[in-house]
Image 1 (tube, helix red, strand yellow):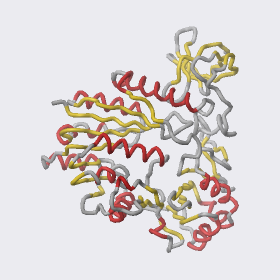
Image 2: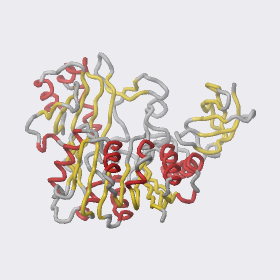
Image 3: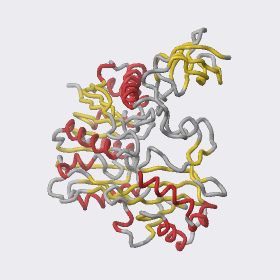
Length: 438
């Protein structure tokens, strides 16, 4: 069935929303608000339909030719067909509409979305699936489990793409790939080098892994993961700082440190867009002021805790990833924060319950949960976070749900600011500052 409709807006997920003649809504990828399009219905449900645009009858002035040849096949990007300024506007509206609809929050609470300094080549890590038999690397196709084989990704930093081109040509990789499942290429920005982590089902020979490190230009270290809590490596064993990646951070955050760095092993989580991550750190320090004591319930390797620790008398962070905790302690020593920062391997829920049982309170609590949010924490959080909460979210729908619960628990929202951590996609990071009502 073919229909002509007008696209009303973009919704969270990146699809355009249109109204069908029978009153149902249709979700259409790769369109822009205000466009008239001829639709082909792909799937129908009681209340909505999934469709594709057969023809753009009146193109938006914001439309452009997607720069990436894989756009539309690869599932990674949803917004490349829009000029970057239009993407930022669309994300601002998506964020406002999501928080209003799911959280009951006034749209004017959202200050806007901070654009990324780079709309392409901003990612310092890329993760690929391995094609069985060939060892070629690719991303999953949109709405499919099939692979799109990739030679270059326009979102990745240039040194990641150079490694991506060379890996399938490596003799060592040809020997290893038969049992490899996934590959992560990550940058070490302070060095201009890259690291490699691959998941494999059998124990590889150390000679092959070391050869792989030698055969890829600009490779600092290689790690592999068979089983267990952390990967094996580094290869070569003498790689500096245990093969860790080095990330520059501003000296103003860590006075007295001549060359402040974060030191993070391959596979430990870091934000994908380092420039936006630094901007987020700066905003976090501004809203935190002089917190005195800060508790980070999703600390990772200390990404957001360390900039606050330099303003605080006491900083505690918890996380379940043993590699992240080890890297955080290593970095704290390097930055001279070891006496002020405590990092523990424990879940956020366990740490919060222990804190609640001890009748201990913190004036500032930092939340940076995974996409599922932190609803499980909200029973105890009001008893522990006595003044302010900073909630950093990568998923506006779960943020809206959790903010609704926090408002009911006695907090009020002071600031909501989006940051475009992921240009060309519908994803974004959101910082929310909440204060306990007096």
